[in-house]
Length: 303
Image 1: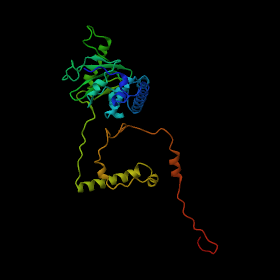
Image 2 (image 1 turned 45 degrees about the vertical axis):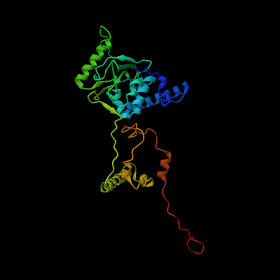
Image 3 (image 1 turned 120 degrees about the vertical axis):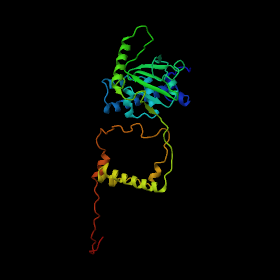
Image 4 (image 1 turned 180 degrees about the vertical axis):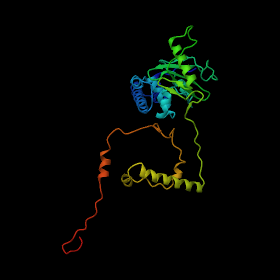
């Protein structure tokens, strides 16, 4: 079994193979923590959570930031972060995460009933406590890594007598049996082991369109774009900023995006603007085209 990772291996240095200094690694780790905090604060605006999430974010540990940032790099969007924080069971198409999340600080082997087809002697499930994740539990799958956040840790079998946390964990299990939802640190999630969240599925397959289908699709796309052009903003503003003129709209649908591109981090998040309208945009809207005046020359003709 590979040795546990230290935190300094995270922020891009060891993974990319460069020789970054400890100061650079610490700076990158700090930036990653700030990014994860912002993600959680955004989802906390629109989602319903147990009290205390925003306060817990201020105490986010570097190890917790690593886990959530890794999920985001594998396709997690801000709306999906709600289910993760509420205990959703997540499958990731990356077996290396199993080792990456075995930190020298805080990680420990744990008993669980998840994914019994995996040899737990070779790949034991790993637990970790944190202010935001409360109790993180992760392990290996046949093709990747699974992770789940729990409200209460459990250690059945590690001691002769159950602890108070064991009894609380048993209570969470009763809630799971009644609601068919995982009990996470900040709420309930229907993303269970039987119905998990799956990150980074390779589902895209390029294909070509026949000319009649391509023409029909192009007409439909142009009609949608024209409708959006006059309904998404005021008609006056839309006329001042026309959309780009693209000759092959249907062809753009077949272009594969680089990396793990898609709808992006925010997906269908409820993102809104909280500042005043742009002064530049207001100035453009106030402009009115003035008719050119026809001057009269000294001889009575037009100037």
